[in-house]
Amino acid sequence: MIPDSSLSTLAASAPSSQTIHPLAAASIHGIAFHKDVLYALDSTTGYLLEIQAHTHNTRIINPHSWQDFVGATGLAIAHDTLWFTRGEDIYFCSLDDADRFHPHRFLSLYYPLNGIAVWESTIYVTCQRTGHILIFSRETRREITRFYAPGIGLENITVHGEELWLTDNIEQSVYCLDRATGEMKFNVLTPFDAPSGLAFNEDVLYVAYAQEEPYLRDNPNANPNHELQYRDRTFIHPLYFAYYPDQNLALSNGYLVEMSYVEELSPLDPVEVQDLEWRMALPAETPRQKIRSIEAVGLPFEERELDGQRLAVFKFDTLKSSERYIFGWKATLEVWGIKYQFGPQDGENVPELSEAFQTRYLVDNDNLAMDKEIIQRAAKEAIGNETNLLRKMYNIRNYVYDRLSYGIKPHIDTPDVALARGVGSCGEYLGVLLALARLNGIACRTVGRYKCPAKALERGQLLEPDFNHVWMEFYLPGYGWLPMESNPDDVVEGGPYPTRFFMGLAWYHAEMGKGVPFEKLYINDIATTKEQLSIGDLAINHVRFTILEELQPPPP
Image (spheres, rainbow, N blue to C red):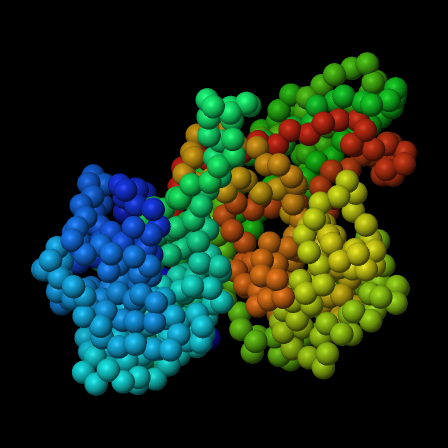
């Protein structure tokens, strides 16, 4: 059993706190609280900023020595002494003399350092180059020991009681480690990309983010006058979380989201259909998604249940191409980031799959080309001699990422074609993953269907996704279904690949009915084929999201 954390109930009791946007900040890489004052280190400008959290009033406290901080990436404050890392060096200075001092070098190493934390006489430094947390004695300046760092990106670090807390900019995660052993207690996903620093103010954890964002610039000297540009975006936001050790999962910042899915009837060709049922899957109830309300849009629907999943059924006695309707549903959802807390030991000696699962989830029932030689060979190569279920699934994912690059086409090819081509959409990634997993005895299924645009700070605004999206769930016997993204973790050419969405989903995933078609047409209760009647030829879908408010996960 993974040990519990003293902060596992923090989210439920933490007060609501606003996002902090420090003035004049370009790229914050390191934050620290000292005597209830927030300090932030801007790596681009070299500014050491003193920030009033409630007013956002910002002051540069190193006006004469900002050059010494350009390129710095870690910040810690202990006993009125400020510590930071820059390049291969660790520096310290007195916080009281910050406007006049020149930092003193504590020690130099042979590789770049990233984050720093100080606890009594111990100094913790993260290093992406070695993949470790390096631990030094303040008195002797010698390395005491080192722990393996849990992620693959640039990591920042802080100490809170008996725990080490880390951010990872690629993994989009925060990790909680035991300070004495380096053993990971649990980890959670952050609500935004590129976390770059973290610090506790009492029991509230704040995380800094630093990234570039695209925007449309109005340039009066250009024709057309709107240009796509990029700008720095950096801010600090509280991370709310709850760890549920009895369920082997952790939730992080959630949002109340209104989602609507509506079809606009607009046939491409003349059509007249009698006794048509248009069935749509409704949002699913899962550990990370709860339904507050669902209502019909345009036309009323009858709600049914299929294999435990809720469906909206719209009935048309006669459907003619000359008629125009809009019909669908609108739901208010609570959604959180989720990360399951399973390790390799949980994939050993798992129970056998039931016969029902084998006949449903180990067969080629979705054009997976499992009988093709290229797919069967890939299934063997992907796992080698591995027998652990979780390691097999992880190896299959990495094998597919090594051989596919992301690209969108008008239609989805079968896994053998996508694998031979080496380029695939999310659906084609998914097809290859499903085929290889099923051939290796891992029950898995397609899930999805949309992602809310990841703009958590733009509340009350209408947001429309550009594409639908699918991912997968694989079955861990003895526990249940675990999520795995199809392609978003394929971000590093040739690896190593992040594991943020291996047994995890971000808050912006909207989960529809599972194990059932998302949308299907039936005539006289008989399912139609695409050749008989295609939804894409009959209607145009409209998908909208509105983020209403931020939520804190329920207590364990």
